[in-house]
Structures are given as C-alpha cells and as structure tokens.
Image (cartoon, rainbow, N blue to C red; front, top):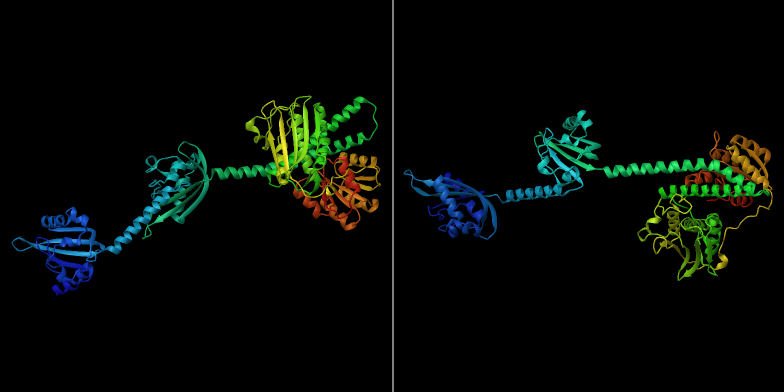
Length: 623
C-alpha cells in the first residue's frame, strides 16, 4: 500500500536520492510535475531541477548539507522542468538513516505551487500599485486609523494638506486635527462611535493644520472589517475645500453686491429724476440773471454726472452677473458716434479748458453696431482724456479706415500711462493717477469701453510713451460692406410736434409733478396721479394717448396697474418710467404689456421720443 501511494500520488513529486544526491527512484507525480520519464532521470544528480543561478551559488549542496545535519530541510523557490520552463516549488528533503545511524540517502517531496505563487505575486503587485496610488494622491489626505483612532498610515496628500510628515504623525491620535471647541465637545470620539455603528460618516467643518492654520474640510470616515466581520480600524479621506468655500462666499457676496447696487441705483434714481426734470424745465424758462444761469448750469452738469455714475453702477452689476449689454445692431457712421459722444463729454472738456481737435474721415467709416453703446464707449474715452490731462491740454479725435477695420483714436497730452499699466487700466475699479478734477469716477469707464468693443467684435487698446507723455486709445472694429446711405443715426426729436394726452403715474410726488410740468411746458395735455388705483380710475375719464407709469409703487405696483390698464383699453401706449433697470425688470415690463422701458432720470430727448414716436405694441427699451 505504501508503495502504491508513493508511485501513484499525482500532486507531489516523491523520489529518493542517494547520499551523493543522485536520483534512485521516480514516481508518477514526479514525472507529471518535472516532465522526465524514469529512465531519463534515474542516476542523474537532482541539481538538474535547479536554475543556473541556484547551481552557481551552490544551493543544491546547501540543501543536502542542512538536511544531513538537521535531519530536515524545507524551501520554496523556482525550479526547472525538462522543457526548460520554470515552476514555483515547495521542497521538503528528509535525511534517511539506518538503525545504526548511518546516512543511506534522502527522501524528497516537491509540490508545484506556481498558481498560488502567481496569485500571491498578483496580489502583492496590486497592493503595491494601490499603495503607490494612494501615496501619490496629493489632493486628498488618505490615512488609516486603528480601532482607537491612532494614525497607522499617512499618504503624500495628508502631508501636503495637514502639514505633518509620516514620522511626526503616525502613532498619534487623529483628534489633533480638530478645532479646540470640537475637542471640548467630544466630536472626534463621537464620530468614531457613530462609524462603529453605521459603518460610515461624512462631515464638513473646520480642521487644523500643523501650523495652527484652519482649513475647511470634507471628511469621510469608513469602518474596515476583516472577513470574519471584526472591526480592524478606519479609513479616513479628507479634502481641502477652503478655496471652494471662499469661492462660494465670493459668489454669494457678488450676488448680494449686485442686489445692493440694483437697490441703491433705484433709490438714487428716484430723487435724481425730479432734479433732472426740474433742471430741464428751468432750461425752458427765460432767465436774465447770470448768477441763476450759472447755478442752473452747475446743477445740470453735476446731476448729469451723477446720472452717468448710476449708469456705470448698473453696468458693473451686469458685468458681475455676466449679462452686460443688449445691443441693437444697425449700420452706423462712426463720425456721427464721435459727434454725439463729444456733445455728452463737452461739459468736462470745457471745464478743463482743453483744446479739442477733430480729424474725421470724409466718408464714413461705417460699421455694424449699437449707436448708444458705441457713443458710451467714445464718451468714456473722452471723459478719461479730460480727467487725466492738465488744464488747458489738448485732446484729438480721429476716425479712418485701416484695411478691413474702422478706427477711432482718442489721444491727449496728459498724464500718460506707465508701460506696465497699459493693460491693467482696463480692469474693473482700476483708476490711474489722481485726475486733474479730483474725481476719478468709479474706475469702470475703460473696463466698460473694452467690453463694448469686444461685443462689437472689436478691440480697444492703449498706448503711452510713459508718465506725463500723453495717452492714445485706439478702437478697431470690422468695417461693414453696407453703403453710406444705409447708415442710421438716432434722430433728435423736436418738442414742437403734435400734442398728446399724457397720464403720469408715480408715488414719488416730486417726480410725478415735475414730469407733469415738463410735459405741459412741451405742449402736452397732462394729468398726474400717485398710485395704481387712481391711474385706472383716471384712465377711464382722461382717455390718455400715453401712460408714463412707475413700477415700484406701494399697494398695486406698476406691473399690475399696466395689466389692468391693458384690459380696459388697447389704444394707448404704456411706458415704464422707473429706477429699476436690470434685464429681469425689462422682461417683466414686456410681459406686463409695456411698450417702452425708460430708466430714471429720463432726459428730455428720450422723453419726447417716447411720447411722440411709436404706438401700442411697439416693444423698445431706452438704455
């Protein structure tokens, strides 16, 4: 039976060696594993199964020596089959002695463990790759805790985020990452208790770096169990979200700022509207007193300046929300844009006693764009030149065509720009040296000008030879192929036209009354009321051609008032006259049935155009 076991065992190579290591017997398992037939291998030395490297270092002889001295030797290593292929073997060699103790040979049992070895190597490689991956992660702190919260591993990301090296932190309790108030509240230990029960916990809060600095962290702690279900420890992953938190706070602050600007401009426009209207009314009254004329011009100039600041604030709000400017494209003569901009900037140019020189192209140049926004762009350039040029300086405006581009250049001999600032000055809220008038504005004029240029697929650049050497701003826009006859310029409307019946509705009594007086002075029949209910009642009686309607009225607001007026009559025109000028406000007035949206304070020209032009259903916006 013993002989049968030895000869027929297939999973083990069982054979006998002589004292000199030569093979004396050969089993069927030995033939299957090693590949030799009995007559091929019996009588040969067992070193035939070893690799060249093992033979060169004398390993077969070493195995027999140990087995002889200790009676037993066991080893694992690579062995060689007859065909030269390698296999991973478990080898047991036992010394055989007779009853007198004389060594008569060795028994050798070899088992093929190649599959197990490859599995173990694959597992080791997988574990090594995972270790390298975890250690190579720098955006997350990944570390292990034992069951009591003691740190047992530490990756590169943990060192970067928390500031501790492996040597400093392994063996320490993870509670040192928590702020003092959390430690006092027992939070680290409570979290581990929760993870023991639920298996996982996720948290966001302040954590502490080695240097004491706080950072906002997202932390995930997961319980680790062995195959028997016993808790072995915890895996902790921490992400530094400080920058994301700050960005979220900045976005929230930006939204709050936009809302504040919208509210502030609305509140400032309401008192400014009757002031501007009163100035326009005074302008129609003959006055022979030079002192009063000086005061009138001062109020006119300063209130217009305040209105421009409010417009800039509104554009800043639009930029912050990524919704700057709705353009109305048409073919334009840039020379007309320049002329209108000069009219707007004239008070500041005259106040600085500057010499203005025009060098305009005799024909065109013509572009496709928004007349009002391009006028705003050039006005900002002229105002900038006037502010930063010493009194009595020179300002020059040129227009010309340059290949496929239309060009406007505004140059001066003023304060100039340092070379390193020629791009910086186009940033939001950036101002140059203190202006000669001591009023640099909000620092948004050039930023808005460049935005307008970009929206027209153009560029706006600045050039200066240096401080106190003047500046030159160049606007380039694509020329249009349209002929000059197609070019349009918003026409000025004469107040001496057909009289209209106008209903003014505004809860601001000064604004309503002054607007009524201005319209009356322009020859229109005017009725003034101060709330929505009165407007509906008066509309039935007065039968107006146009309703000038405020939006932010108490009780029934302007939107609801407009809807009810529309349900009564379709024939009259409804115009919003409001301090609310956000895009959302314009959309609301369109939905409510308004024909036009005017933003306070309304200048006389825009008011005349609103009253005399267009009819019901013509949706337009005056910027």
